[in-house]
Image 1 (spheres, rainbow, N blue to C red):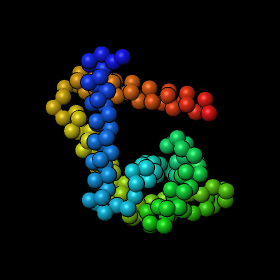
Image 2: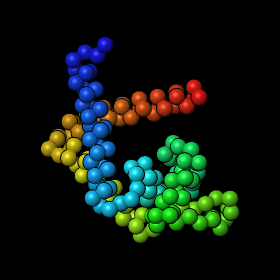
Image 3: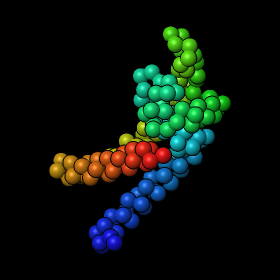
Length: 153
């Protein structure tokens, strides 16, 4: 049973998660981007990578190579990603963003930058550190839960 504070925090976290998704989806729609949030997160992984491959993106996002391949093929069809065989290792496929893919990456990055600045604006260093530690603990909980789930499969 959750105490009053835990219940309040649980509702806040749930509401925040839902609002982030809604606002992110609306940002994509208003920008005329024909991609799901998960596809945009794949584009984000490509934008941050020095050199991206299907296996590298799968590892960084914690999803299967098959899922990445399906999403990549859709994004290739929409003109957001270019797929090419790696010249040094013909088994490997190199992924790069097109001009449209870079635009999507920048819009997504801008959205997250605005979100982080809104959270930390007006806070002193101590308050920032407390929030950071709390979010870091939450992230570790999710990582550990994901690892336990994967081990059970």
